[in-house]
Amino acid sequence: MYQDFFGLREPPFALTPNTDFLVNLNSHQECLNLLRVALSQGEGFVKIVGEVGTGKTLLCRQLLNELTASDVVVAYLPSPEFDGRELLKALARELHIEPLEDDLSHDVRERIFQRLIDIARGEQRVVLLVDEAQTMGRDTLESLRLITNLETEKRKLLQVVLFGQPELDDLLQGHEMRQLRQRITFSYELQPIVASNIGRYVNHRLSIAGYNGESLFESAALKRIYNASSGIPRLVNIICNKAMMSAYGKGDRIVSSNHVQRAIEDTDEALLSRSQTPWVLAAVACVIAVVGGIGYRVLL
Image 1 (cartoon, rainbow, N blue to C red):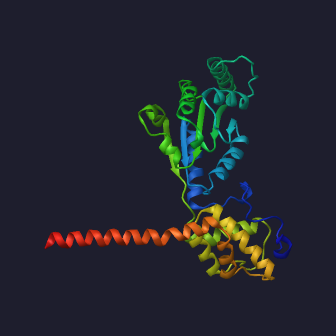
Image 2: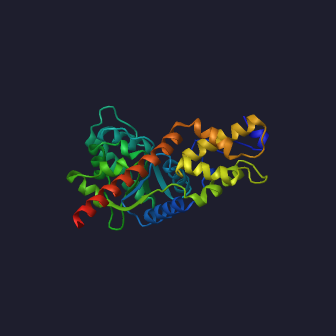
Image 3: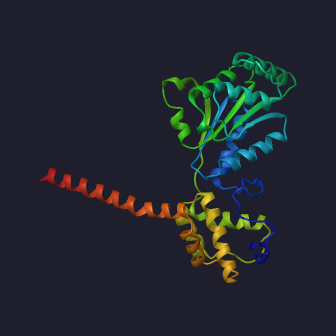
């Protein structure tokens, strides 16, 4: 809608996880570096967690692109809401194993094992990327662990990267998950964008989309975007997109804090994020007051 007005080739703040728009923020770059090191060392399980909208799927796609261009056979499960048997069949399909109508879980597992051995003989390795891993059940995770038992004297035949929301950590708790927890040798928690990097994030996406003019967003507008989004990339994208629509609608070439405010008022999640802050501060103040009062009475 506003692309021609601002001289853009494509929408700069679309929510589709397009790796062309990946910004090398500290948290994202650290996470990618960890993934590269962990996979190069042949580790069995790697776990990446992050809140909704922090860019897990974008990083998963970036890693997928990098691995596809190397000597790695990649299997990708974007939303693994399977039971154990369905997981095995999904992995078999990713490894190009021809399905048999009457395959039992044991049979499918054996055929996967044989395929992994064949790939290893060809001097390749297999990496399984699981997005939205918090949707998996404990039985499904246990089935996945059993597949990773196969290894040579030098390395695992299957490496697994789990991308998930913080609920994944909850899922992995409990005595029955201890064997899988011990297999997770690298973990990382994605962080939101820090306030000092909001401008860099916004300007990078604008540049990739074709913008080459003066700063499009005022400093005050960027500050308001950060306060409303708490640095969550998806929320930043939503607010920026709506703010540019507001500026376009008024014929303004610069996005001001007023345009951003209108975008915030039209974004429920941003309003929720802002409304929670006073309550948190008030709760903390109450606790301090109560504790202080108790301490005062004790001293008396």
